Length: 256
Image 1 (cartoon, one colour):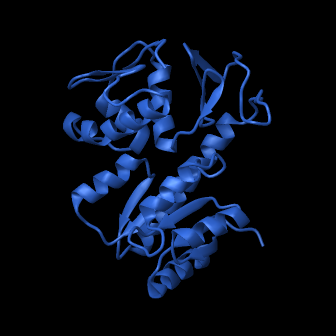
Image 2: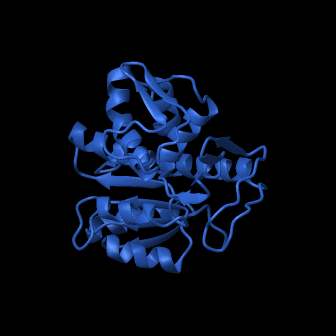
């Protein structure tokens, strides 16, 4: 039977898990369930999933650890990931978004809000897939890429960024970024050598409209993570320059 999408619900409380499953199934979705992050990884290995809803506080492997494992797998990194949690502190919400997750819902979750977020994330993922399809990938079996120029690839110094495809290479070697990290790097690359304001970057990565201070707090950990994954040491700006109180700028660099 055709469904509107395949959702993985990761929740250790059986009552909450069953309620979420019932809401989603009645709304036309195929649902897989897991009691913790370890079970979730087993589901992901066995089934194709379109979106993940995960609690944070779970035994064996919590939601933060699960998200980190997902980021390590190129086949899973593009799956929209939404936290479902009873943690309501603003610092917790900011931390979750700073990791690069797609959204953060507070329990108990209203069914209408849940379905609105699910539909929105799936719709966005579908648009990305439709607009980025058709670009050939010149890669070898080990993930290496032969440098090339094409309408969908931005070549900037030692970096190659495939627009909309969530693919990045450094010196021909693949770089694994979260979806939010990719969106940030992509936006900087599209305006390379120019300072991109913090609110504009936050709108591109998180879909939020806010002031400079909050935007800075949310974007700072993303930029640090990108710099690290591009081979730069802590404290090294690398190819992403920060302009204090204004924004970030992507510049060429010969430093690994």
